Length: 570
Image 1 (tube, rainbow, N blue to C red):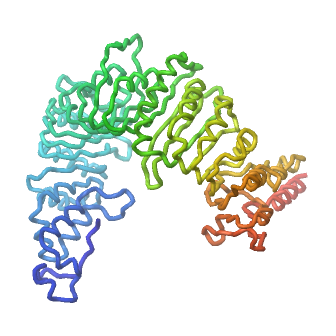
Image 2 (cartoon, one colour):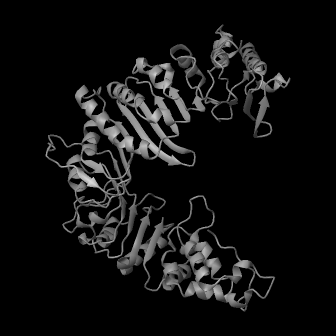
Image 3 (cartoon, rainbow, N blue to C red):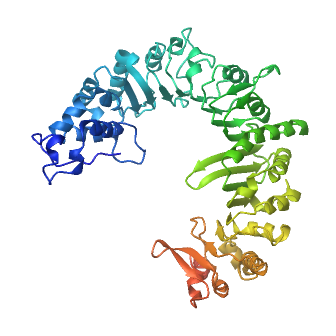
């Protein structure tokens, strides 16, 4: 929340008398305590899209009037939060010194990326002199114009000291493979009693360190092996969010089956990316949650060789654990939006011969359950079978479907059953070519509640060259007897017509003559008008079918230019 500057000079009356002057802004009537709370809010990190940063807001606030300036100067906690290393003000010697001076002995929030070597030196001197005051460390590594990184040894020496106030530590340094080396002295000297969030790359530390017991949010990098993660889980009882990336099992490493399951009272989000199925399965097996826990999973392999799935018994266990996380979410917060994507496996596929992704997101459009099946045929088939009998499908009101090249070889028999479960879906987002699957494989009565159809892509036309050489434009697939026209007619024939066809999606960019839709009286077509730069609605049956002749690319003109070019060459 940015404070609105009021046109007052340094001799303006205090807020106690402000109400007597009708020319003053209402904010001038607020009490000291209320203003203090407003100014405090302005010190918190802003959105990356916000053009006005907290340091700018607070500098301007302190210059509005004497009363406001007194509040700011009497609040060193504000200035301790404003050490924005990337702010132009920090590039000035007087500016840097003034912000640090005004912070007194308050906790420090070091944030941003040093803009140059001068600010970088200020950053290091502040760390060295005031490390025990640092509460938030959220710094991106500085590099000069030649790509030279910040001095690792100088920073590492500070990080080995106790951190009594440290609450947040973010340092995305994974781009520097040798930034830190192992030290006989542990990170923070094993003393960081207040730390809650820890996200770093290429920093040497132990997942079994005593300060991990207070961590609520952690990012575990590929430098750790599976056995390290399983051992560390036992000391992370305060965890609320955990993210792992690229965790592997060491060669000849044996993970004991005796590892006991760890119970988490507060874990609400678990993200596992780019690990083999045996690895993420062991992590899931060792975690039990008191609360519904959102699971984001991307299972993939980095391998030049043809990867193979584990045996079916292992896949069965994997599905059971996936639904052990998913089912409590569906009971607590039913998914209103489901997304299915089936990618076609190609050979060679590197670096991901096998992929399986699932996630559950909360956003302003509702709860989204997203699944991407690509290359784990056995796991995908079992998962869909489990899914068809769950609460997920019946609660969804929006379905996004994207099956590459209409290839249903992984779970063709289950496709009709799965689609028939979407009884509450009112919005379907789908590329045009996937309508063929719904027409051929599904009962016409599927999606009984469907009202809105979002087309995310039209059937592609052939190239200009192929048309000239005699290739068909496949007009029969694009007109009233094509996939889209057939799908519409089937909906009408079963008494469940579409009410809105949405073509606004920016991926839909091609010329199409859809004037035949004017015969579907009452259907609203929403499309993007490139001339006005806005979305327009046309109600079919209004007598202006030309509005449905969309021209994004002039084929006849292109062919004429092509012929003219070849004629000149010859």
